[in-house]
Length: 46
Image (tube, rainbow, N blue to C red; front, top):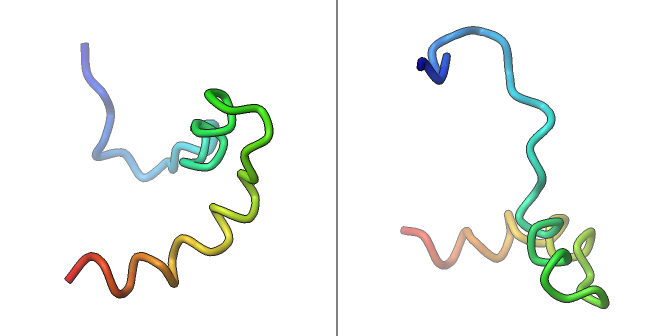
């Protein structure tokens, strides 16, 4: 089975990291997490 990673069609139906975390903890602020993650990750990745 092929994953079709190399096709030009973007996958749009995957949940965000915040949505995945909210599935584990109902009161988790998924939108806030997703909105702030890019800025948070800048200082953590490289």
